[in-house]
Amino acid sequence: MPKIPFLLPKVYTLIEPGAVVMVSTMFQGRPNIMTMSWHTMIDFTPPLLGLVIGDQSHTFRILKATGECVVNIPTAELIKKVVACGNTSGRTADKFKMFRFTAVKASRVKAPMIGECYANLECKVIDKRMAGQYNLFILEVVRAWTDPLKKSPRTIRHLGKGVFMTGGRRMKLSSKMK
Amino acid sequence: MPKIPFLLPKVYTLIEPGAVVMVSTMFQGRPNIMTMSWHTMIDFTPPLLGLVIGDQSHTFRILKATGECVVNIPTAELIKKVVACGNTSGRTADKFKMFRFTAVKASRVKAPMIGECYANLECKVIDKRMAGQYNLFILEVVRAWTDPLKKSPRTIRHLGKGVFMTGGRRMKLSSKMK
Image (cartoon, rainbow over all chains, first blue to last red; front, side):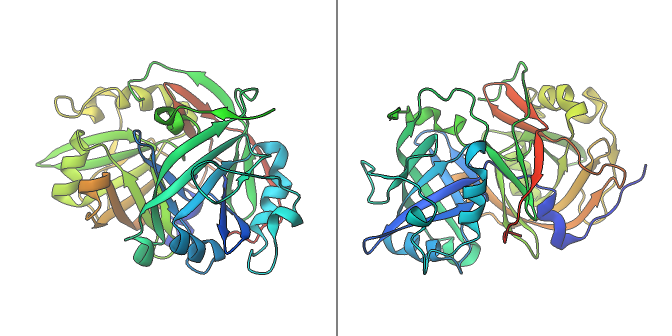
C-alpha cells in the first residue's frame, strides 16, 4: 500500500511521547502542579532532562523565576486526577488541595514532591537559554526517590486529543542500548 | 510506604521515553539508519522535533554535515529488525541491505524513507547550536507520510537495558490538552 501525505499540524499525534509526568513547583509560598508529556532524557550522568513547557502556562513563569521543580511520575491508578489536574490552571487554584495530592518536603529543592506518585525527581534548571525560542528547559536531576514496593509500574501515555494509553506487553531482547 | 533514594545514574530507567524511531540519513551516496528513542515534540506548527543523538554515533556526524534525515516510526511487527539495527554501526555496514529495509525516495530531503515503517517524517535540522553541549538537534518536519491502512498502530517503547514494551490499553478522557 503506498503511503499518503499526512497533515503537518497533526504530526504530533504520530510521535508518541514519553510517560505523562506532573511537574510540581513552589513560588512565593504557593505550590503548583502541571501535567505534561513533552520531555526527553538528554544525558545519563548526571541525569539531564529536557522539558518543553508552554510559555502561556503558570509553570513556565515559575520555572523561569525559581529554577527548581520536581518531576513526579504517576501510575495508571491516578489517571483521572492527573488529567483533571492538566485541565486546570494553577493561577487561581491550589491543585494540591483541589485534587487532594499530598505535598511531601523535598531535600534539595523548595518545590514539594507529590506523595501519591511512585517516583519523584528533584530538579534544578541548568540551562534556560532555549526557553524563549523553544519553551525548552534543561534540568539536572539532583535527587531521586521511588516507592520500593512498585516494581513494574504502569505509567500513563498521552496520544493526543484526550486519548491515553497505559501498560503494554513487555519483552526482553538482546540490546546494546543502555 | 516511605520512598527510598534512587541512584542518579539509573534515573533514565524511570523516565519512560517516547516511541522507538529509526532515523535514516544519506551521506556521500551511502544510506544509514539509527534506532533511538530520546526525542520530544517541541512545537505543533510547524512541527518541531528535538532529537538527542549520541556524539559517538555515525548518525551524529551525518546529521551535522547534511542537516537532513527522515524519522521513521516502526510498529511492533518489526521489533527484532529494529533492535538488531540498533546493535549495529552504520560505519561499516549498509543497514538497509543488511536488514532488508526498502529505501523509498523522499520528496524534500535526500535521506531515504524506510518503506516498512508505518510513518515517515522528512526533517531538516533548523538548529544545531545544542548539538555540541547536549547532543540535541532541533528539526522541522517538512513533509510527513503515513500508511492509510494502519489506524492504531502498535509502536515500540524501550524501557532501558533491552526491555521493550508494545501496545497497551487505550482510553478517552475529557482533556483540554491538544
